[in-house]
Length: 541
Image (cartoon, rainbow, N blue to C red; front, side):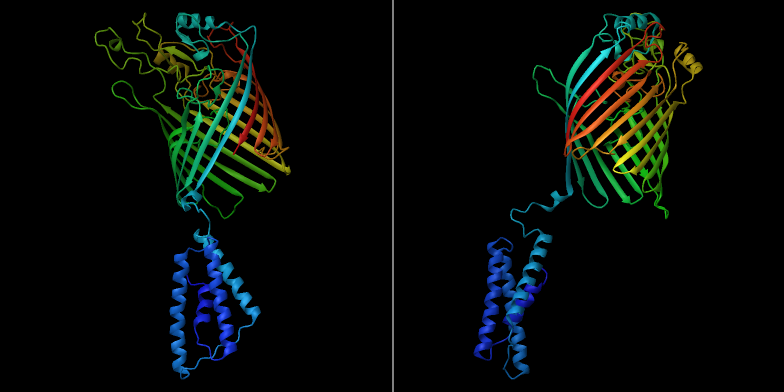
């Protein structure tokens, strides 16, 4: 413990031998007062007995040394000046405050004090109960129609809408459905130093659905699974640089037009944020590389996703803020190819790599144009579906925040995406099939009015959005799973509202109305339309 007013006062009290009866009495009063104060601190758990005894011994030693020195200077006689009561009280208070302050800083003043490293841990989480009603249009094509079209034409967009394999359809396109769902998430953020931190989050959900963390009630009262949703390390070597690796939160400035809100990325991302003298302009640049599928020679080639996004935020005033980001994304080896003849099972040279170009049913939602990748002579084997198009989208996102009526904000958001790799001629050469429809672009406009974040009682927010997302604008596996019940090739509107019931308790309502743009079966007579109502109660902590 560093030298404090307490040790100084005790040294003064013991530093001299009394020269008169009244002086001796004043000295003894001061000494006993100081010792009593130390004993009281020990009794209340502020000081340990070991620290208190050591402090007294140290002060007595210094007092003896000081008394000897004084005695030599004055022929052995030492006078102790009278200490007024007001000075004694002031010394007592100074001692008390300084010791308590130091005890708090060093944590030995707290009863049942916890280790200091726990101060660097932060917990976060939420619970959400949801009712979801799904209303299908009665004129929708039956799910079996998608299966029949896929088996005849070897091209489809239905994805998991009908499980497009020859046989009985397993999807639902006409029967209304009610679901009651639960989401639970618990996250830990650890700040290890000024530069290093990490995060871990567990959530309900499954390892086969990367764009949903919901657990549907009604599983015979069985227990739920918890999965690792995030696990990452973060390194901030400078104010302008942040590097994150592992299973990380979405690093891009984006909306749910391209990326589902529940999606996390696996790989490495770095964000540069130069600090300019003009603090009203805040540029940023994000780079990322993420493995989509592990390379397993000779069974499967590796698949990668690369991205770069640059942008700027302008703070025109305290009430006007504009943020714009332009991104370029590239998927490597995700497109399908027709299997070579000699890799066909039962052929001249069977290969364990048969099916390496598949766009797995566990991955796809619906909307992307698919073709049968089976070898030409493999007429009897189960259908293996692959992506017809390559994917190299560019994405422009902008958000204007107007806070002229703070705390009420008006936020305008616009998002536009185009798949620059969509090429009908290239698709025909690679797959052998001709795609005459299908769209390679999408956009979304959204208006939000209310508090930027609904947190306190009676906070509110309302919003409206219009979305148009072409079949092959983005990879359907990773986009929003709620609009149209997931995927691309959908257009329509979204209406929503949130209201604060209590602190961190929020009531939410959403209505999502979606219609198909092109046919999911490539038969123009087949249409698809669904409306979804979501009513939520969420608790955050």
